Image (cartoon, rainbow, N blue to C red; front, top):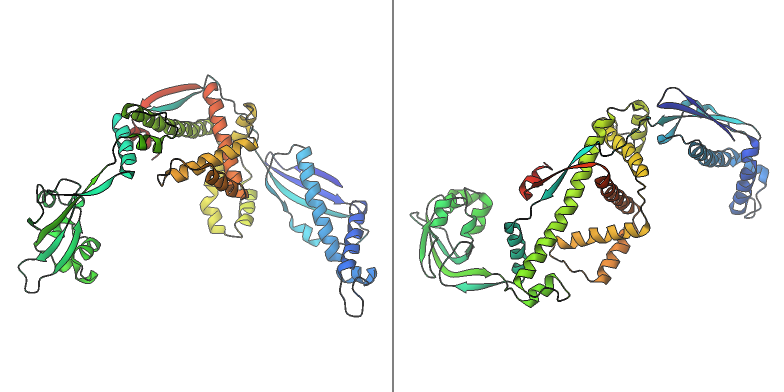
Length: 444
């Protein structure tokens, strides 16, 4: 097949493919024979329909399929061998619809292609990029330790109320003809919206009666009042006066103790033997997570820096819009809304391709599997499951790797992690230490 390219400008080109009979005849004849074996037609035994009749009725369709498959394969081979940095897919020109397919003849097809803009990006010690180290405070460690202890904690009944306790009792409306009342009402005064109403419960004991205003306490929240007063939703806001609440029970959550069971649950293996060692390991765990977050932020900053360094690139926008329109099944509104963002993503994709090649970044199957394990661990960690049995981990990873889209996303993550690691050694890091709160604000 004779294929040639004509550049209209730097980012637009036309591919011309001339298909000769020698290119398709063997494939066409084989397709006819295959059709004959499967063909069922009235008046003929299965597989005995004459070839001439098959060609007469279905020849154009079969020839079209074979030529189309041949074109697809040959065009992409040509693009790869000619090292044309094409964006998207070749777009068939309208004149191709006028091509009359006939056995034994030559056909000429033309395709518009979008070509990536040419540019050069290199990063080195002359390029200074921010890198943030997060200070792991004692408060952060304490919060995480408390979360671990809560998993082994329990509720105990106590005699007097303290902040964060749960109270249970009977509630009765005051100074109305038909007062609302309910038994076994449970409240957490700590979550009142009004501070003065919270203070009314301080130091109260079992059997004490507290006079308070639920409407004020919950800032007229209809859902909260409906649940508390056990009334219909439409009636909840009609009770704005004071109520008596007789406390029948006070319950307090007591965190689990610092013991070997806690240490082994969070850090299996018996390495942790004391509270001091436990807190040190928790701090290390938090630091490792923030290290990954810092590396991720670094890649985001590399993207911003490199994009600004490259500047605005020239793209074949009309062709790209046609490609996007085809991919969105003709949703012009969606294309218009997302086009600017698509160009940003495309710019970074092209920049990243060059940086990946320059730094010799390669992703192996084992890298993808390890990334899948890390993602799985993070997902389980959200539910407090830190130590996943190997069997569950492997099964989860196996399911993830069955999905092509998931694998592609994992590969992209591997590439960015490895690229970030390589660039940290190559560029000049402008390091600074920030608090976790300051660091999180950087993503807003």
